[in-house]
Structure formats: structure tokens, C-alpha cells
Image (cartoon, rainbow, N blue to C red):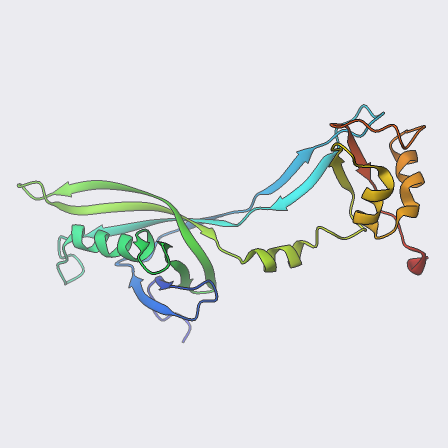
Length: 223
């Protein structure tokens, strides 16, 4: 029902397919805000015979979510909890290495419309209130979670092998334009178009380390 109070929940799984659920952690207080970060990676590449530095699309990096979680042991919620124990529970679920899979568990954050399959990337703890003997009564964790998507799914989404995209390649020893055209376009016949796009008068005269642009070329079927 709309308006019903629901706590942010972090579930942990042993597998990337999110089939084997281990446990969950429910926050004491819902965050008052959170931030979501998108980052697109580009690479500068300069074609042979050109003076510009076009920004070559690299990849869309995994999204990141940043939360601030409050832990309180003063009993303000009506139930007094041990702050150190609650923090241990948080890290046992999100950050400790699981003995069976030899890595931290795969996480799923659920809160309202937000559903993110992710992993814990960083966490900073700040203690701000203490008992006379030094035991913490209040703490905050600033946690960053990174989106976790299977590499096969990410590659399928980005489709970086498409001949409709511009490609930049650094020439390696023994490589030639016909071979590279076959790898990128599926046909060697486009080598003259690539040579022309890069201002090459002799397509055989390639030096290791040269950066060559392979522009979008329509196939005969698409003409």
C-alpha cells in the first residue's frame, strides 16, 4: 500500500544468478537521501594523418549508489541494540569473504522503486556517541555499492562488435588492414575505405603503434 513504511533491505546471495539466498540485513533507519552515479568512459584516439583527438566510446561503467546508514544504541527506537553487533552483522553480510565462493557475497538492495544487484565497494564508519567506558552508542556508515552485471549480459547490451560503430585500433606487429577489416566488418574489401579515412596512400605501410580509425561502413545488404 502506498505510504506504508518499509525499511531498506540488503539481501545476500552466493551466486551471480541470485538463486541461492543466504540472509538479509534491514537498516535501523531509512536513509534521508542517497546518490546515484553514472560514468561513461571515453578514450582519446588520434587517427593517422589527423590532428584532432576524437573521444572514442569505451564503456558505461557500473552504476554506483552511495548511502549513509545510521546505527543507534540509545534505545530511541524503543529497542536498545548494540551498535558494534549491528555493524558486525552489516559487514558479515556485505563485506566479508564467504568461505564457499571465496569472495564477498552478491548483494541486492531493495527500497521502494530501487532494486539494485550490486556489491559493496567501500564503507567508512564514523562513531559519534559513546558510553562512559568507550563502547559506541551511535555510528554512521557511508557505503558505496557498485552495480553487478554479468560480463556476458553487459557485452550484449553494449554490442561493441557492431560494424555500425567507429573503432580505433593500435596496430600490432604483423597486422594489416585487410585482416583487421575482416575482424571488424566481416569482409576484407573495405580496406581501401579505411585507408582513405585515415589518409593512407599505401595500406601496406603500417607501423606497430599506429592508431587507425575504422569508421562505420554500411554493408551491401543495407544499401
